[in-house]
Length: 127
Image (cartoon, rainbow, N blue to C red; front, side, top):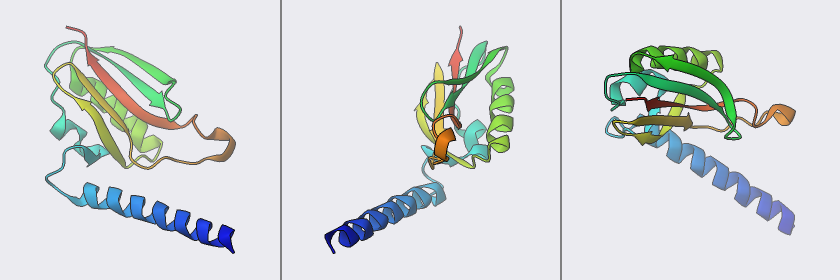
């Protein structure tokens, strides 16, 4: 009986967290919880050369995208990778003139591949 109550409480907590994230995503005034297509709109990076990388859910390097002359070129590659991985929304962890970093809003629990999937991206100024 106690296990069933604990399981129901955990399920309720998961649902509440999911609803809170979705409500943040629906709020047009929030710039920390956004759709992938909004990343360009909120990016505060300065013009100039940047480096970009994709990060796994585990936090390890997924793929180094290399160097770009402008952050918008790096953003093109990141958006393509996010669409390919079916990542629709992200949480902006860092957004200033030197660094733009996002992680996927909803963690994908993929069995043995968990942690190996695309989890986020970072663009850093090289100037």
